[in-house]
Length: 370
Image (tube, rainbow, N blue to C red; front, side, top):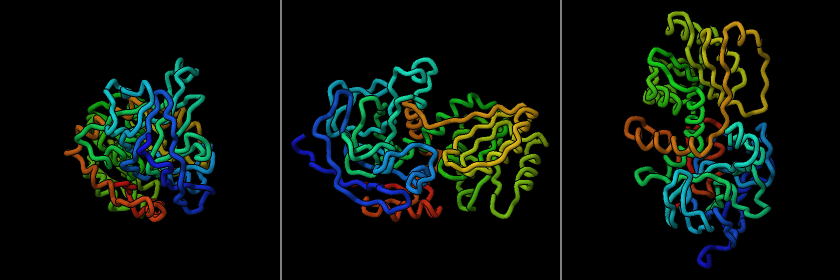
């Protein structure tokens, strides 16, 4: 520990909608059992980071916080009993890891429901104040603290830190969602609402899982062009079309039935009602993108009359992180994952990167520390 700095430079949010400030945040001098201290390699920017910055999330945020939660760090200090990751691989100083939000392992949701992402005592990186020890609980920081209750996964040597960072939220959320959908049958058509990072990754996933046809609805045009490279058979633009136009296009592609599976990754509340229209009778409708406070009027009888199975999917546990790393490692030469990383920025450029993400000028920018 004597070789570590006393402080870590980090991007701190003190009030919603305000620019992030680069501050000197204490580096913990004591590493608890099962905890780790990492030197950050990369942290990509997520749409959720933007929503948190703007104060539009329906989740508790204990300001001031260090923003960022898609981080890859290299181990520089280890607490006792921290020598193994969540799937049994040995960990040593110098190894790169991604790490999960915490789950206590002893509440109802962890034990009986077996849904650790819903843990009653969950602590989430970038939502916890940086004014209390262990301080470094966000990704836009030179150093990060891995809490003892967090899952941690060693990053395969063949993966770049940028792609590992992409895996640690966007792809793990998709893998968790896919686990809840279950098997995709070879005759099924999947409609993906949204051509952002999650929508693109879900498109690749649906294709690998054997969907007969994958249709992506989104914008702008450049993202739809990329969606084709991620396996989309058809793309329907939001710009220049109405909901009725888009429904007609999906019906035409599905012999008039509608999609067998619809997946929502837009974050736009009005997409929910549209998804119910796009789904065939007896379909599954997976909701992932709705974490904002926006509201929409709906007709509940639509779900009943069409016998639609509506599934919400939140975040992802250590299993989802592991599946994400495996998926991107195995398929990194089949899909243009690297092209999703549209900008690389230094920590001092974080506000520029955040503004560009907010204005849809980036698909997935990343803050690099070396």
